[in-house]
Image (cartoon, rainbow, N blue to C red; front, side, top):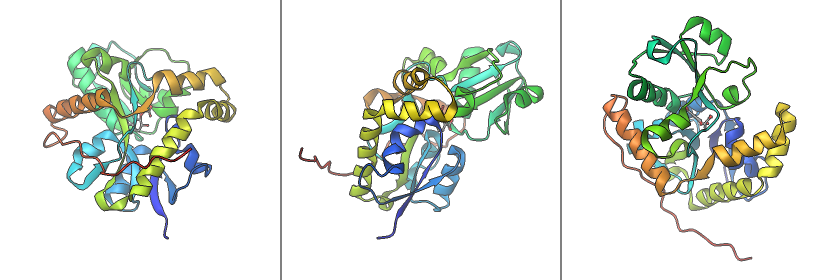
Length: 273
Ligand SMILES: C=C(O[C@@H]1C=C(C(=O)O)C=C[C@H]1O)C(=O)O
């Protein structure tokens, strides 16, 4: 059987969802295709991959084509620690923001937060994620994922956009989802993605240990990021947060209508112990 190509990104925050597939700890029929989140979205749109872990705003833009895999997301319920808007002047005075080329969703989140909470509507320019370079060319800089989490310059003037969103709405924020076309994933594929999440979230210690060696950071730092900042269950509260985000995105002219949240239909098979 030919492999199902799924797009993923190599940030620590995605590891709990993909570790079991990378290491073949579960049954699956996937070939992993690695790229930055914004490019995974492009690859999915161009049908270069069958499904992918994509920025949530990509689903909102093209929802009529797509379905969401149930039960899984990358979300925060407050501070996320890896979606940071750095600034070098009072946020109320910024005119330009350099944004990480990896990001799609957080660029829109930044726009909403800056307008709603700080009453500014700056210009956004996508750049490579180098903080010092970005701040030499713009008043503020958005970094996401590992680029923010392991940022080395020690620059401390930033706001955490997960925190800001929670402050604005009281809701979780959903950054990424497994998305594909209706016919692109079988029930077994969907089950494999759910099993992979279960394996990953039950093996956070192993993932944190490997990450601490790979990135040269503390085990506890990785573990607390993966358990205190990030949440992988797509529940009612996360869906409400996502709907609220899509509603703002609509009012800001990013999407043409507020999309329905449509899931793949599948019958969950319970494995006998
Ligand atoms: C929580 C995160 O969510 C990410 C944010 C994304 C975006 O802004 O488009 C895309 C993928 C996610 O990994 C993060 O990378 O820090």
